[in-house]
Image (tube, rainbow, N blue to C red):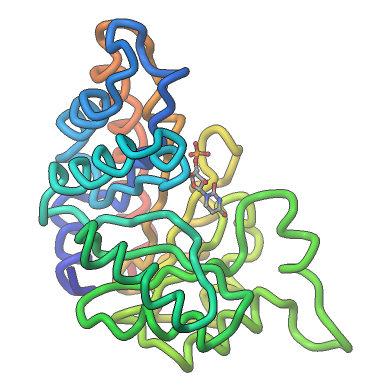
Length: 269
Ligand SMILES: O=c1ccn([C@@H]2O[C@H](COP(=O)(O)O)[C@@H](O)[C@H]2O)c(=O)[nH]1
């Protein structure tokens, strides 16, 4: 899916919501007996018209063993082409290995994008960027407390690491093939992040359970293509735990979509 098609979908649905598919059998409603695929399908059916993207985090599927890989693939197939799909795997290795991480996400799973860690530098990221029509989503300023350890640090009075990552990576990939992960818990930095990379989309996790600031993210992070995909995983998936869990998930997604529709009216240039 290209940037224009993504923006068209955002405008049509008045939503830039990404539903995170972090399916945890221990948190799923008891009556599903741990059937992760049935759970995912029910969540997808309940939220399709309210979101523009889905983000399965591979950790939850890897933990299920061989069956998890099948469920991950069947989930992505079930989502279909209308939505932007993000394989949240935070990959990145020497180039020869990254090529196979990229092949898994794009050829095997058929996803639109994969999250990648920038720590190993340009040759570890470039194999992901070689796929036409696919996206690399690079970790820039993550939502967790540990982002303070390295990402906020600067060496010898230079810009902080997150800023260096964004500036350098924008030389490797255009705004039509590269996005950045910027956590909603870092909303006070969004004006700076947007100034560093005016045209790029940001994948923004951290609202809901992690306490991120949706309004701040929208106010300082929106660009003329919206430029934001805001993710919620637990806040939507586990809004209910009874037979009506999908209705509860829909209500949680609807609440976010309503807020996003007002933010688009207020902040879309
Ligand atoms: O900085 C980051 C990068 C990735 N994540 C992932 O996003 C979801 C968030 O889940 P919630 O339940 O909505 O908190 C999860 O898959 C994380 O691994 C992130 O949180 N922060």
